[in-house]
Structures are given as C-alpha cells and as structure tokens.
Length: 405
Image (cartoon, rainbow, N blue to C red; front, top):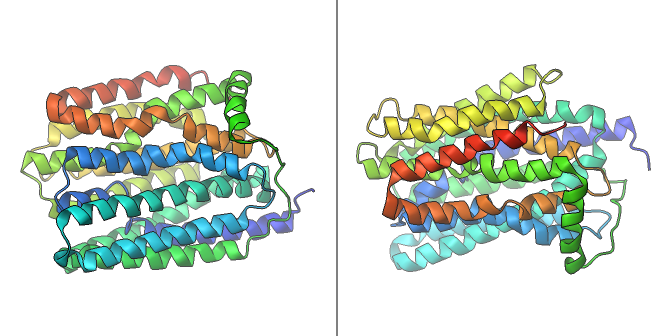
C-alpha cells in the first residue's frame, strides 16, 4: 500500500506532538541525572549505580532483541506502542508513591523496589521503541524523515529547556524525599499526555510479516550483519562511541566522591545538560539539508572522548564542573540524531523491526559497561577507568569512516 502525502503529514504531526510532551517530561525522569541522583540519595553506591545504569541503558537496549522477535510477526503495532507507554506511566506513579512513603519503609526495601520499578520502566521503553521505529518508518515518507528528526530535536530542545527549569525548581522547592515524589508525578502526567498523539496516528500500511520464532530470529541476525556492511559498522559504533551515553551517572558520582560538589547541584546539572542538547539540536536543525550522519559522528568522537578527561580535570572546580554537562548535552543530542537516522536509512520496511532488535542485542558493551565501570572504579579509581573510556570512544573513528550513508 502506497503511503499518501496527506496521511504522512497527519502522522508527522502526531509524532511531533509526542516529541514535544515527551521533552517536557524528560527531565523529570532523566536517566542520566535525576534517577542516578535519586539512587545515591537513598544510599546507593558505585556498584548499585552501575547495575541501575546497565538496566536503563544497556539492558533496555538488549531487550529490544526479544521484543523484536515478538513483534516481527505483527502487522499493526499501534496498540502495543500505547500499552508500553502506559506501563511506563504506571512505573513512574509507583516511584512517586514509593518516595512519598519512603520514610516509613526499610531502606533496603526502598532500594529493591527502585530496581524493580526501573526495570519495568526501562524494558517497557524498549518494547515501545520497537513499535515506534517500525511505525515511524512506514507512516512518514522518506523525503520527510530527515526533516522530522531535525524538527523533533529542535522542538524537543525547547521542551527540554522548560522541563529542565521545572525539574530543577521542584527538586529544590521540596525537601527529600518529597521532591522526588513530586518530580515523578510530573513525569507520569506529561508522559501520559505525550501518548495522546499516538491515538490519532494513522497506521494503514501493514508491516511485512516474517513468520519466525525466537530461534530463527537469532539465526537471522548473523546473516543480516554479514550482508549489510553498514549494519556491521553501526554495531561497532554503538558499542564503542555509545558508552558515552551512559557516562554521566558516573560523572555525578565523581562529583559526589570529590567532596567539592553536592548532589543538591543536580538541578544545575540538568539545566546545563539541557542547554547543551538545545545547542546540538538547533545546530542540526538549521543544517538539516546539508549535514551527513557520518560527519556528525566524527564530531561526536572528538567531543565524547574528551569528556572523561575534562571531568577529571574539573572535579574539584565547583564553578566550571557543570560545564561538563553542557558538553555532554551536545554530545548526546547529536549522537542520537545520527544513530536514529542511520538505523532508519540502512533498513527498509521489511527488515526494520529485525534491525531494531539487532541494534539492541548487538549493544553488548554498552549493556555491561556500567556494571564493569562501577566495579572497576572501586578498585582502580577514576583516572584509569575514565582514561580507558576515552580510548574506547576514540577508537570508534575507524568504523565511522567505513560507513556508507
């Protein structure tokens, strides 16, 4: 079935609605700042932080493999997308309730419950992402996709700025643990509103069905990787350069352990990171017709590999340290635009769900890196671990140069 321009424009607006309100919710449930600071505030240590970050960043991506197998045989995925988003809303409401009553609950129970709710929150996000990518690829024309990704980032940057100041205000206005309870109420409400755009989504074109069980799905992976050199290079890049996405929780831990910067500064960290994301997003928006994903990734290599070194140099400087979050925001926003765009471009309507699953399953290093980092930090210290991270990220330049898209 040929996608009509009018239908594509309607879906374009539905996805933009979602992007706008998701951006407003984002800093109230941010996995790089709010959630790590929340964990450390209730007594979490480096290993706890590593496990939680692994669940949120790596584990969630890895679960895309299993969800891809489940959804690959389903022609229409809109209801699954909405169900997954609603599950995320419920998990956020659970976190809000947990912190509201946390003073009367054993701290170990609080920690365990946090892990359980974050597990639901992260894995349901993976489930939603599979449907999101597939629906986006077949409901918006190819000619409009680059404009969509750029406009999405531009609008998101505005929403993120608003939510950054909002989240910062809430975290400072209320005392612990009420501040986190209110923060997650805002996150749940805005995420629910964001899902409203998808109720008006027109999914008339069915996805190509591939009748395969999970075993066959695993068997298909190496064949696709062998046939598509771009996919192979893509997997190396997300495993090497992608570890920069999960770096910020450990930068926050560095700030806490240095003793010169308090966790009460988390509101400032959110604002600076969001300003950085806005700078990166706006820059790409105005160059939407001319930029190449490959060049964006080359920029990410030099910026991302410098971040751990800069963090070490500024760990005792309370004035300049928030600037790391500004740079990290630029890195994260431009990296996500490039990687999302590349995944869409190297796949087609028939294999996009499979590729999304391969992307998650192949993200092995990013999945285990936070746990390894949490353990190594306790024994080797920040200098060695952060230096090693820089080297890994910089080495990804070899595979970026091989990309053809």
